[in-house]
Length: 335
Image (cartoon, rainbow, N blue to C red; front, top):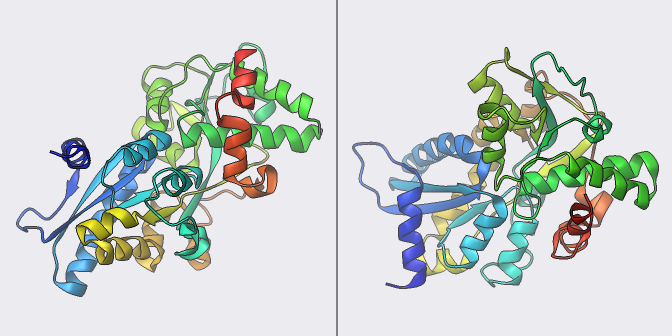
């Protein structure tokens, strides 16, 4: 058995398949995605399978694989045969072009909005009553405040949290030395680095470790639904970062498996009214402005800066901050 076949077999054993009980599949797709998107794609797969059946008569199985975003990207590089990837940052898609030659380097131009069908941002989750009085990023660097953030070296959640804090400190001080000091203090308050956003949620909400969890806005809503607002509450900082969630077909896989048509349609449907409506219901900020306005009560206005604006894009941010020996390693070593 080839390595790629083994990875795909293992992937099927570890992910959930979506298929009506009485149907037999004509085609299977594998969506390799990031940690906290599993509930959205579980529901999205159902509506897409129904749409595709009505449009073409073909029955699909869509399998899901979720984990820390960079771990997922590495799994695809190592042979996990993803028909599509739906990540939370462009960096973990670019690597598939640069190192694996699995997709073209201009993959982001193939779908609208840089191939990101929805967005999110980083906000705080605190214990009910907010006993530590956490209101903004400055409160996360105070002595005695325990902050839960997953590992920025391997998770998109962690990277966005780091970059959001860095951007806030930069805008406030305009001084890189002070920004480094700020970020070093913040990560000095992180007691454990989990390997994914969902693991960080478990640490905070189930293991009761930490005073504040920094996480995606959509994850806050899921946690509150599961654990009730009597235990935890959301806090929106004065500013945060725009988190775009890019998606692409994996050309080398779909051409090998003959699934390009289905995989392309799967991603295009994310931009449909039905796909955008579902994204909003799962607390992702849809790209469709009309649908976004309908959910204005769900999405609190918050000033956001972008990775391009503050860091010169994901590739530069990765090289400067997260590669071995980068600024994160430097400030973490000194914490």
